[in-house]
Length: 292
Ligand SMILES: [Fe+2]
Image (cartoon, rainbow, N blue to C red; front, side, top):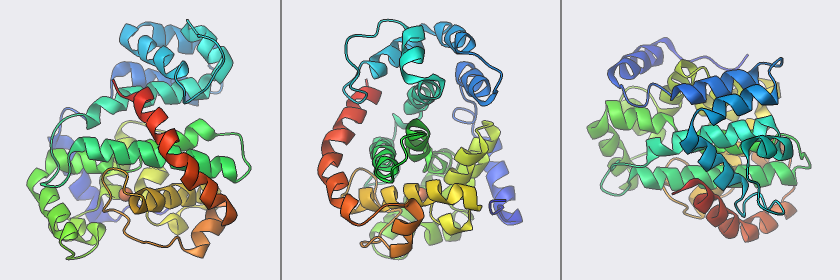
């Protein structure tokens, strides 16, 4: 079993979640999509039927499928064709990514960072994690890894809504070198963004592995063995993106990637160079795919 939240965290998290309206509820269409893909008995036709009910989402899925990020030959004009070509899981992840992107669009988090900076960081971590996973020799599950990276810091959005002044204070004090972001969150708000993210994704009924990553991406060693590879992959991507300064980057201030992170993510040191080289273009492709 993955590590559990402490009782104190749970009280603060549930109070925060009940005080925020907007992001605590996922659009109904997204909830249905997650349910369909998590149910082994569901079919591609059911997924198509649900996506079709939301024309804006259908358009977004097609835009993403036809973007440089996927590099598919020719123009794909229908959602059912997209499902055949990319698979149900990929289309689900695209739909979830498209529907959570709106949560990051507006507002400031502190003097230094806006919600958009957090979105840039999140996209960068998703892209980097996908590349690390690929480099580890596992072609399956790429989209799942991308989505895990994309949502890993989503708990910060709960803090921004429930404790805006305290969050700004924690960020400002971290930037001025007073301590790590997580220590300052606990000191000022009472729990860190992992705890808030765990609460939010539980409320959203996200699958267990995504909840575990949101809740424990800074301490992948605390995850149960079958989730550790994904945990270390996201953790490594987080360190790389903070080091390369992609968007909001105070949550992981380590400069060197510890050896156990390479081992945990299952990649060799030699693969890091090629990831770093391809990263800026991959991030740009993913940003233009998800934005707008
Ligand atoms: Fe984080």
